[in-house]
Structure formats: C-alpha cells, structure tokens
Amino acid sequence: LPDQLRDYVILHELVHTRFKNHGKEFWAELNGVVGGDAKGLARRLRKYRLARREDGGQAPGAAAGLGQSVGGDPQMKEFNRALEELFS
Image 1 (cartoon, rainbow, N blue to C red):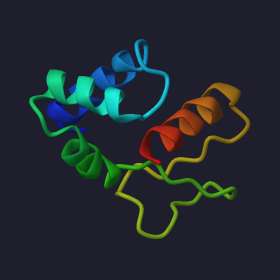
Image 2 (image 1 turned 180 degrees about the horizontal axis):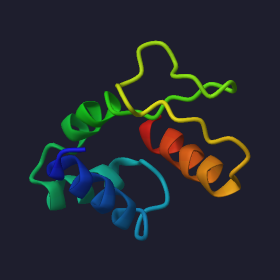
Image 3 (image 1 turned 60 degrees about the horizontal axis):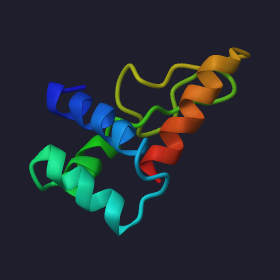
C-alpha cells in the first residue's frame, strides 16, 4: 500500500477507539486527522482489497499478489474479516 493509505488504515482504526461505528461523528473525527478526505481515501483503499478463494487461487479481478489463501490460519481469517468490515 502507498504510505498515505497505510496511514489512513491506522488512523481509521485509532478513531474507532473513540467511535465504535461509522457514524457522522466517526467520519468527522477521521476527516480531522486525515486532512478532510477520509471517504476519498477509503475509496482509493478499496482497490487494494484482499481477495481469496478456498482453493488458494487468486480471485478474478484481485490486485496482483494480494489474493493469498488464508487456509486454516485463524489469525489470518480474523484479519481478513476485520478488513472486510473496514471496507464495507
């Protein structure tokens, strides 16, 4: 990920320590710490979504190199679940 998007992900999660949802207050706070374009950064980040298939192959349309299977690793499954929640 580009540095700006890495920073956005970290700041997004830190703002969740104050606001446990994606309500108006959450986005206002996040806009304040990312320079006013939180939703624009979220849209840019969506093109880097992790994609996975049960057979370990890359899902169609996935960004190159990001379609790694998580297999039976519960930590990776939880990580991907959290990412899906972040991007939805």
